[in-house]
Length: 255
Image 1 (cartoon, one colour):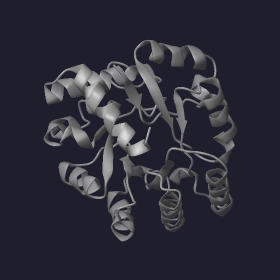
Image 2: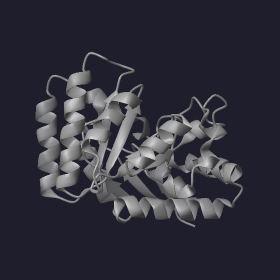
Image 3: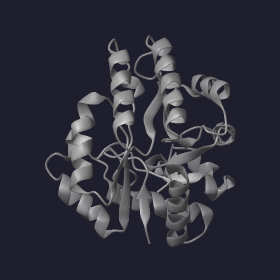
């Protein structure tokens, strides 16, 4: 059984004291594919080191996170473009719009999102979308940019059934993580109405730890709790969930 964590910030400072041991715990539990989203240029060196330390298991993305779209965003986008031109990445991400922390940057967040969608098309890569309190804004951009060569993952999906179908209509898989185990997460109430071919698993570690670890540091090992919850919701085996979602991740990332 191979389990794929399609979204984990393994370079986070939260793992500085036990990173290798934490990754080994996951590997020992069959979590053997880790897809690493970018935030901004300050994390690039740490990401490259991760890949060097675990070359068979680490797959890097490149992008500018919407909460890091600041005054220097054009320099950051130039860094993204420069890195994409130099070497192989498996997605442009995480990118998108976040209106939870700062609504004043909406215009430049949209500009950065659109620019990075164009880069993904140029390099024939999937996008990994961050959306927080911004479904309408995200969907408006996707509607304008939709095409056969636009595809990817709607990371940390927390919307409604209707929004799930809309995301899927833009060639997006739904990234399902710890929220599906929360009592107030709501997506557990309809998720089994969505065909498993549209689902991939993620942790977003060190954030959003699933029950019974909610409120604590998340790690890739805990994806097993997400796996177990989906097996319960879809009434099929954990092994089948792992197999289907890993195949879906291979379809998106090409590996």
